Structures are given as structure tokens and as C-alpha cells.
Amino acid sequence: MQINDNFLKLAAGYLFPEIGRRVSVFSEANAEALKAKPIIKLGIGDVTEPMPEACRTAMIKAVNELGKAETFRGYGPAFGYDFLREKIAQHDFVDRGCEIAADEVFVSDGSKCDSANLLDILGPGNRVAVCDPVYPVYVDTNVMAGHTGAADESGRYAGLTYLPVTAENGFAPPLPGEKADVIYLCSPNNPTGAVLDRAALTAWVDYANANGALILFDAAYAAFITDDELPRSIFEIDGARTCAIELRSFSKSAAFTGTRCAYTVVPKDLMGRSSDGQEVSLHALWSRRQSTKFNCVAYVVQRGAEAVYSDDGRAQTGELISFYMENARLIREALSAAGMTVHGAEHAPYAWVGCPEGVTSWAMFDKLLHEAHLVCTPGAGFGSCGEGYFRLSAFNSRENVEAAIERVAAGVGV
Image 1 (tube, rainbow, N blue to C red):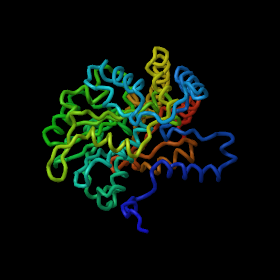
Image 2: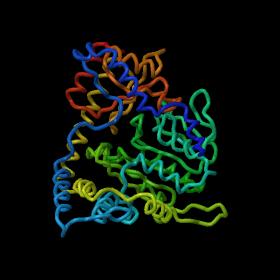
Image 3: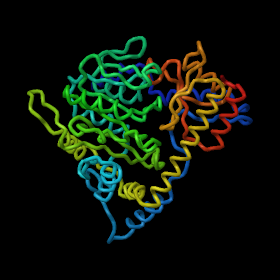
Image 4: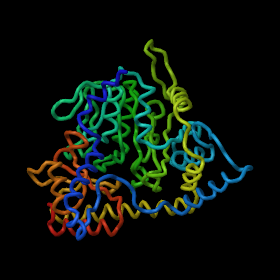
């Protein structure tokens, strides 16, 4: 039996389990101290507030349906129930002027999963471009699929094109200097919290169409954009239907991180080429992939997601989003007042914070953990351009966020 040797290229454990390991070691060694000042976790972006009542009510009703023979359901449609796909297409796209049909929406159990699974329908010869810093899944799954060489000392993999995202360029990725075939864009960005404006996104769509490239557009945090002038979907840009796939999720906006429901939009206009040069529909390939490898999301969960689009659901998810964005504001203002450089946390639930001069991002992680009992995410875990920064998540209770702010304001850990 032979393993997939590409896994051996992975430089280290996945970022978030490594954070968990360090926190566990510290907790075991400092149990008494933690009784007086418990750890506050603003690292991993997991939600803490309850799921909206409209979603819970819909799911309870759906569970009860499964208890009656006349309303029981077994296997559902491979790509999602029409009742959910139609709501998504109408409310998230058509209402914002995007030409997206319900049968171009594929319901799934997570954008993280889809961003990895899309590699199944893409060939090994593509030049892949990623931002730096970047959500680690984009890089690691390409390594696993054999699309890269080995990593260098900075953690960058041969065969990938890295697009530096820095304060100097406003955290907007520059167009690549070499031709890219597959491009990962995330807006609002994880980890920096930056949002691509209409002009920047138009430049990317124009580049992709001119070069026959595919944009994998991760819009998992689109609901947190507070300025209607900023695009929430790449399909708000003319020409995107021929060059882009969009990924979205209910995880953060509707508290579905544990329930699992998301969706990916693959336009029928989107074409790729086979090794012999023939045009092939990516919509058809993704349909084939999903119907073969995936049985979609449970009926009960899809009914809960459908309720997001009800009047009550929209109001309740809006309150949830506002709650987290108020947390983000509090974090941004408190750290700024403490003399730190803070980016993001305006249209995204993440603050991207500069480390004190001479302090590395992992050293800052350890310093905050040991001195403030506060968990952040070290910027170096997102790529070499993330060194010198750390990320704080607004996903937590108001009580914990205010306590964390007090520790920072007192000068603890900074």
C-alpha cells in the first residue's frame, strides 16, 4: 500500500489544531491561574451566539415531518432542494442585479469543503495564484493534490504564484506578473478583513477573461459588509459568469458552524478546456462530481437555511451580524487606543493587528496567551506576508470581548 506522498510536503500541522495544541499545553500547566483569569479565545472564527429562532423553528418542524410516514423524506436531490436553491438565487443574487439561476446553485456542507473539492474538476497543469497572507486551506489542498513542489524556508511552495497583500497596497492583491490559470480571491478577506471594491474586482474579472483563467471567489463573509457600494458577489461584475465560481456559507451569518450548510455557484457559461483543447462545461463537471461523491445536506438543515430568507430570519440574522460587528468595532477602537495598528474589523468580523516592533507573530501569540490569557491567531500561520501581524476574531460573547479589551487596555500582553 502506497500513500499520497504529497501530504509529506505539508510543512507543519494545520494552523488551527496547532493553536489548540498550544492552548491545551498552557491550560494544563496553569490550571490554578486560569481559575482567576480564564482564557478568552479570539482566535478561531467560530460563532458563539445561538442560531436564529426562525431557523430553529423551521428545523424542529422538519424533524417532526420525518416522524410521519406521509411527510418522511429519504435521499434528497443531489444538489439541494429547490426550495432552498430558489431562495438563494433570488435573495443573494437576483435581488442584487446578478444573473444567477437556481440550478446554478449547489448546496453543500461548507465552503471549506467546496474550496478543496473543486480541485477534483481542475487539471494538474494549472498555475495557481493565492494571496499572501491567505486562508491556509487554499494552499494546503493544492499541496495535497500534487499541484506544488516543496516549501521553502519561508513556507512558500514551489509552483504557486503568491500575491503579496500588505498595508502598502491596501491589502488588495495585485494582478500577477505571470499568467495564472486558477486564482483564489476572498472578500471580505480572511485574515485581513479587507474588501475588494468594484474597481479592483472588475480588474480581476477582466484579467481572468483575457487570460482564460478561473477565479474561485470565497464570499463566506459577504453578509458582514456594511457599505452597499461594495460588491458582495463577484457576479455583480460584468463578465464574471464566464470566469468565476463563488463560494458562500451560512456558518458565520446564521450560526451554522456546527450545523453545516453552504453553497457554491457555478454558472453554466463557465467553460474550461480538456487536455486536447476541447471546451468543457465546469457546471457539468461539478454536477457530475457532486452527484458521485456527495449526497448533499440533510433535509432538516436545508429547511433551517431556507428560514434565513424569511422576514423573521432576515431580521434575526441581521441582529446577529450587527452583534458581531459591534464586537469588531469595540476591538478595533480599544486596540487603536492602546497604540496598536489595526486593520479590518469594519466590513468583516476580523481585526488584523500589527505586532509591536521586533515581536514575531508566534511570539505575540505566546505573549498574549501567557500574560493576558488571550488567544489570537498568529499572522505567520497565514503566509510569510502575515508575519508581524495577528488576527483577532469578533466571534465571541460581549462579556468576553469586553474582558479582553480591558486586559489589552491595562497593557497586559502588549
